[in-house]
Length: 321
Ligand code: ADP
Ligand code: MG
Image (tube, rainbow, N blue to C red; front, side):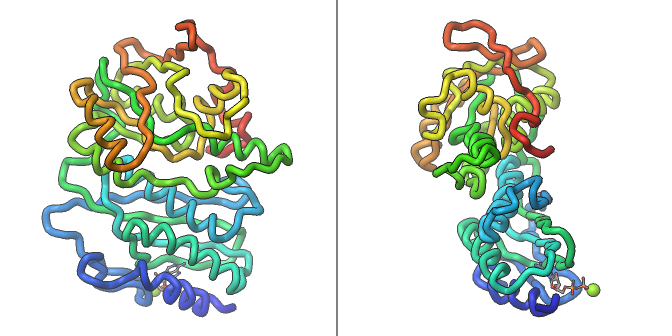
């Protein structure tokens, strides 16, 4: 298949999520030298980009459907962490001679998540080379409304969405040849877009957990100039951890990446909003600790004793940076 045929296939295949109606503000989409997008008056543009390389950011045997899904998901997760509303995407594909069946499956994965979130594919680039997918997501936000890593204050509650540690556990199982019925935790993260939007005006700081709870919390603490206490028994875990000993589970939850849940800090007077969001958005929200004055992160085990995580890096999980 030639490059232009491939682009045509992508253009046709994503047509539903690439509607050019007024809602999407696509004045010119795929097919010219660049796209023209209309940013509504009074709104600001939010931009994020992330690349996934085969073998590093997804296992080599990952289905094209899931590669596309994940690539869009991780970028929408960045927009979610800012409280933005996703609108457009640009897709840069490096393919080692992909066939039309591969592209078909890739498009289906992209379209599935893009349709859920009203994202229009407006352009990109297609080259031949090692398998690599890079996506730029563009979204909108009210001026000044963005959630940032800075802004957390001592006394704020530390809240996590969904469950954490599962994606890293799946990856470890794959690497040791075990079969996991939870593979979707790794392949199809769910960007918490609606939650991010709901947090605007309430959360004092927010980040998405891509590199692990400790690593990403550290970014918030550094930007905010404070420390935190984590209660290990409050860390939310899914079925994949049933039967695993606490310490191993905690290490995954503290250091495992790729979950793409939101971690946010909430002033205590907004505490009652947690159950409201949880109910309205049908999402699990867990208070996992508190922001403190003293620098650093203190993890408390079930007996209230300080716990020293065994692994803080990615080496253990064989992951990326
Ligand atoms: P140029 O050489 O001017 O950059 P291209 O031939 O690379 O143009 O692309 C032609 C059109 O197809 C452009 O609108 C571009 O944005 C779009 N396009 C190319 N590759 C992709 C892709 N992987 N996904 C979406 N749009 C693409
Ligand atoms: Mg050109």
